[in-house]
Figure 1 (cartoon, one colour):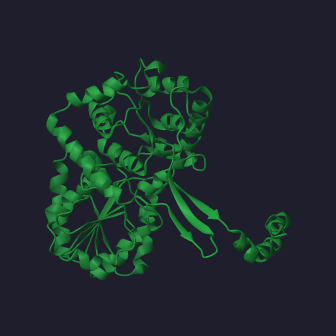
Figure 2 (cartoon, one colour):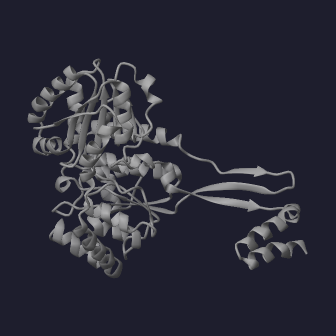
Length: 434
């Protein structure tokens, strides 16, 4: 493992660091054409296309009749997993729901003295499609992704939610995904994956009704499919590989920091794990811990590749310079592993989720604390936010003008319309003042 050593003293050092990390999002243009053809194929042939792709890539004996998982199979899965795991899932769902309930927005109205009423009406979308990756042939089910995507949609008030996930080779879905769906009260699950699943959720097929908003993580084919559908349906975001930045001082535990960096590195060879610290002794000890801990991981090869290519230990002159670098990095996950994280929080401008102090490792947020773990990556946190209830809502402006309002302001409105060369707009208002 060869996690690179970097130095940052001022913004003059940013260009080299920025160029290095920019290569993580180098697009694979070959995927664009494949996905475009797949979307068109599913739109044209529906269930037949889904069955063909599923036979080719996931389940050799798959038939279109098996697309939808029977409701009884979803409920039965609850009894097929340990009661202790059911209890943990229930508590995680409750915590995520409690957090997202605080995000609900209300419709509002203001009334003027002349009787005009203006306002904003907040409504959920009608139908949402959620994608859940299979995870290593279905053996590492991404149950947390299902929870994090379903709960805010439910809190928003979405009445119709469809879930898709690729089947295992035997045509089944991991019981933990089914059990989690049962605990969430979801009863529509379809056995299909990758870009063809995204196409089905967007366009609809004989079995799957089209959706208004699509959410959920996936590989480059899933991400590309979602990006090509922007403007036709709503999407959560086009997320890239995971990333963590840790800003640490001498009070931090090097073994803990190494473990936190590895928690992201094991995701994907493209995941980025970066430590920023003014303490050179801490930096050296973290490097030693990374070597030791990485060798003992089941996913050692992935983690080592990630750290070799996209891992970094950056020394800075002080925490102020470290904070400046953090805001330039604009990471998906930021840990403030310092003695007084609250004193630094106000200086953080760009981070998807901020983990405060030594006892808030990133996995706490991934699974259990409550905030959503679907976060912007690749510096897009500079202008976007975590998945939330708002992703599944839309807002309508409400205008109820009174006769006196039109009488008082009609000439002004007509003048503005004529300045834009829109005579019919002007006359539309003037008609009411005749």
